[in-house]
Length: 514
Image (cartoon, rainbow, N blue to C red; front, side, top):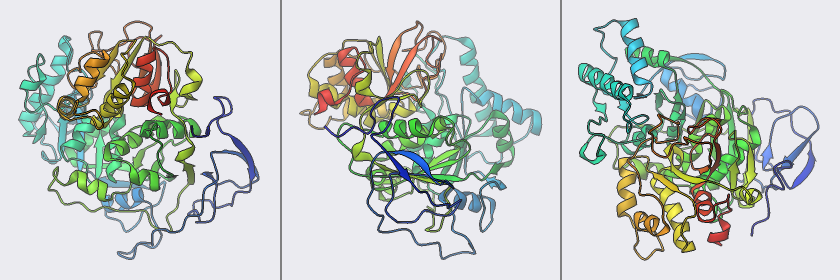
């Protein structure tokens, strides 16, 4: 068993060392030997650390093209290009040209109303091919007002000839709706709307999910979205960048959810307020696109404006059959100015959960072994992707046991739903996720949607309508987030969620994976 990275919830790290920090301000961090958590301070401070890291042996060279005078971060470069300037600096306000605007059934009607009021009842959107409308939040419900939201979206998309409207008319069987996709953030990726170097805005806080593709992606409100509908531009303040360098081989019991819970637990839910969270290092480079999405998806839980990961071969391979639109990736310069840089040795971490009622209420899964639970929920943009279900199925298969609490499965998209029923789980002898889930006693996978993650209406599948305790792969555990205000939600990886389903208690997945 790997040594613990966190001694207890009250003393989150093994060692305490006194470290003299250089007064670097906004300058780039050097490649000298460093602690895995390294921050810029002006005086002697006591820092809690994970482990000591080896020296960095290489760094990116500064850009040599254009008229850039100072090294810039990825986010700064993207926004500079979007506003037509050679360079921008943190805190500067710029008019950025938007490449893609996304809205859904939750915020779309409000956005449309503002657009009509401000630009006129007969106004036309700036570009009907750069707007993506995706119903996903309140689709499978009998509530008439939710149905009216969908009607409003449909009427507007027909009126404006919106090219990318993923409509659903028959809610009784999503499969007979050829255009319906599911959760907006995963559908954006699967349908090729996420591209390196671009600006993607959406009326949903987890739009930052798309930063996994090396683009600037963030959530905006209905008023801003209404303005973008009419102009294709938005005034944005350039955020400073926090850089998280994660190195080390991922243990077979960890997933990206553990990594982001570790980071949020370290910097708090306000630690990245209006800042970019840039992820780099050998660990990040080894992650699949879906795991990278998990990292970027939850930066907003630390207050982040956006998350971003450098595009590489993994990115290009994912996009190869999804888009024919040309794109231009950008990378942080060697002399880029990072507000702070954190270094983390991933090999020292253990499976984590975020206890009620905050994503930064971090604890080791094994520390919560006495917490009795009522159900498990596997789904959402954060934890309802194909690889999330593959991971859960892998653990169920390894255990050979049946679940002891109701276990809800809600695929993020139509494609994920199809994968659950068709793709063999590695090492299972050809069994699919659906077969393994059935053998383990889970509920049958539901229709793809946001499901109970945002709470939703009382008839929402998997919703906490009573004050129950739930281990969930979703992204938020605030009071009332999944329904009942007294519900208790433990955020966890698919491994930890599956292990907990098998025992009826919050459970470290190493009990079944090692």
